[in-house]
Amino acid sequence: MLKLPIYLDNSATTPMDPRVLEQMVPYFHEKFGNAASRSHSFGWVTEEAVDYAREQVAKLINADAKEIIFTSGSTEANNLALKGVFEMYASKGNHIISVTTEHKCILDACKHIEKLGGSYTLLEVDDQGMIDLKELEAAITDKTILISVMYANNEIGVIHPIKEIAAIAKKHNVLFHTDATQAAGKIPIDVQEDGIHLLSMSAHKMYGPKGVGCLYVRRKNPRVKVTAQMDGGGHERGMRSGTLNVPGIVAFGAACEINAKEMYDDAARLSKLRDKLENALLKLEESYVNGKRDSRMPHITNISFKYVEGEGLMMAFNKDIAVSSGSACTSASLEPSYVLKALGLGDDLAHSSIRFSLGRFTTEEEIDFTIKKLTDAVNRMRDISPLWEMFKEGIDISTVEFKPH
Amino acid sequence: MAYSEKVLEHYEHPLNVGTLDKSKLNVGTGLVGAPECGDVMRLQIEVDPETQTIIDAKFKTFGCGSAIASSSLATEWLKGKSLDEAATLDNMDIVEELALPPVKIHCSVLAEDAVKSAINDYRIKNGMEPIQLKESVVH
Image (tube, rainbow over all chains, first blue to last red; front, side, top):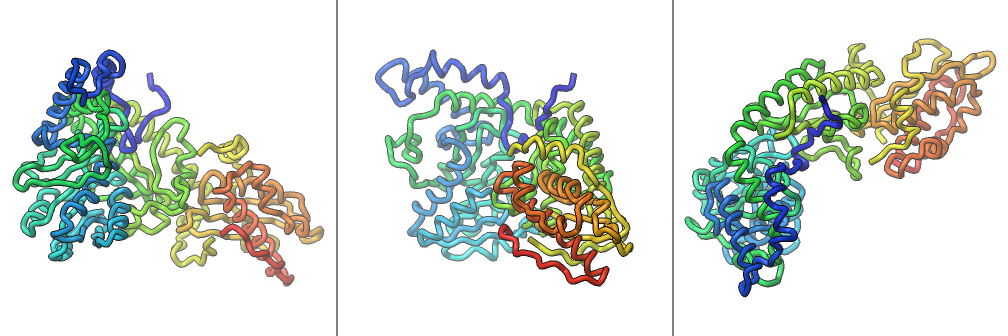
């Protein structure tokens, strides 16, 4: 039986895997000790659990356990990476390179660093959402200390050429950080093979709980350090103070271990379902996929349905299907998605976009239902859209004089 | 963000969706908003030239649920009104009737503008002076 509503917003957050939940429960009540308590067994038990989880997390990205710094999630990890490198390597330089389509926390951390006297360059992306590696290399100056490029984009799912970026960073003796929030646990990541120096991830995007994540900080070739951004007890090798979130960390570890085993099957199954959804919706006239289709996460598709407005469209089915939209109306700012605009999409197409992100618990039945419901909704909204009528009459919308508000 | 019952009702069952023949002398058309702002409203009125009364009103809207509801409500109000009465439509009446939150007030402003541009289109077509449009506050 199909259960409604259907959740297709797994890029926002995933439900916890019941197997993960099971692992974390004892650490709330039964094994509640502070992992930093060295004087009694309550602390020893949880310290051991944290060590084990650290191994599980490290293994997912082929890192060493000592290189995992637990944080409250990716936002904190990204802040720690950028601000921590900026402070630690102040004697070497003060310039950071990133990309216009990064998550807000990266962009805002760059602005913060600028206020502190640093500088940054944001690389533009092409109409597929990809950066130009030559531009990246050209942006490096003798003041550049860090390149930060996300592994996979959260809105359109495109995967950046991480290995190539890391090679450029290495060549110029610059550190390389990647925000792998959307990619970790979904596609194989190997920090050794890829040459990554710093990497952020978050448990709640990979079937773990909210409020826990980590920053991978390389210890060898080269040894990387970041300046702590919070003062305190000097936990996490002095890079992140604060009593460890033991249940969260245990669950994060469990989620990583499951993902390491199951991501290949998940990816194969989800990319089939995603393609089915995408191909069916592309049968609608004037619908377009945003982002480079052959370099994408297996579970994400972002589609613009021209001449219908995203929020109005979503309203037709959001009782039954949960997705997100690049439409302005979904945010308080009334600005459409800056990621889609960076791809060169006109505001009208950015307003008309819907992101579908599938997950481990998505079923084919749900996808079939979504195809039917979306097709009906787009047709219904087009029936009441003056722009669709104009298009059908052969009027070029770009020549119509509108009175913008 | 949750929508009010009334917005949902108009969205689910919009009244007066459609197109009037804009080449007819007694049809006035207002097209307001812009695709890049995420809202375009086209509102049309059909006027009885004898009585200067609106006998039919139709709309098509590209926009969010509140924009669709605002235009649906506006067209419903217009029917049977004299042109002079129709010109007094105030966007705040729409805000109240639909319980629009502050971030959606622009949808009601757009509906008011659409009504007034439709009236003016009719007036100009029929050799009358256009009515003065007040400057909308929320833009």
